Image (cartoon, rainbow, N blue to C red):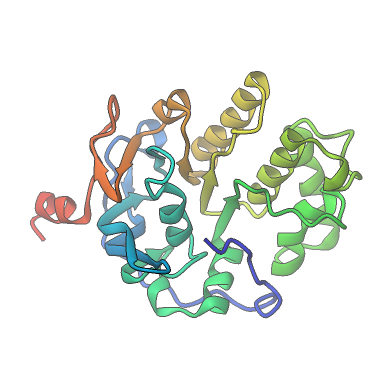
Length: 280
């Protein structure tokens, strides 16, 4: 999967015109989130294939999916089940072989690479499993980068917001260090701070606590779920951590490119099921 974002041609541009899907009630939300909500992510008949030297392999098989604004969704499954592939497609990092994807009112399947990068810049925070930090920049500058590119706040505000987030992830004494001298866990926390700094509508996270010790992992989880409660940020997480998955409203379990019942969690809810429930 090609995870590298190419922002050079998108900084300073305005968001694309939105196409708002029909509103409905988000299942599983509680408290202030149990309100009329709209789908913030939709996938219809999503399919992904890759070509090998001798054949073509299907990674995802005609998946239907709907995620409401403010939901917390965990995607689980064995290694090789297609979890990271699905996350990258939903976030617009890659283009599906077939099917339609809508993210924050944008029809990703109709956009080119630069247009999808623009959507991510304005609406999405992504925590990569491989961090994707720039080694020549300090931790602080790495976190500031999305704000610098989007030009949505002043340089002073960008610095203050980035410093605050680095403090919240416990890196107040490491802000000026480059990734080369940071541990894997510290780099993970920088990546998480960078994903949060734009106050995105959706956070996609691929094993967000996989490189952290137990205490730090719980603190980062609490930060993500607090943002969900306070700001209504939608969380979509790929994880092998069943305890983390159990904290989410809904669990989607991938097996051989298909959705299955997610153990103790909810059965994945498809677009077809939502249409049947609403009579559409």
